[in-house]
Image (cartoon, rainbow, N blue to C red):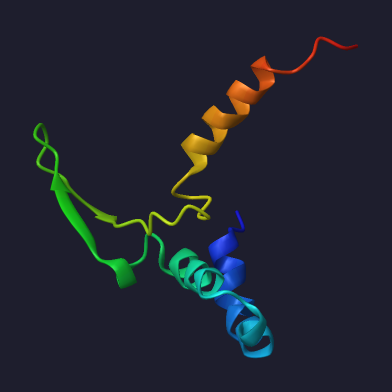
Length: 90
């Protein structure tokens, strides 16, 4: 499945080259964060299963508020709450 990070990795450098002067610093940082989220660039932790001893490496997330990977659960919860506020129209 194509992710925002994949698009930013492929087209981000050309986009930033053309529009960086028009962007806020926070927007440029968000582009960088989303590209690095859950990759070796941010490091990670090695976890070991207490039952079988199998090891699993999990990369750190960027925790940027614009990141769809980091905030998917928060976004889904926000949408559920908004649905309860909708008017009952056909």
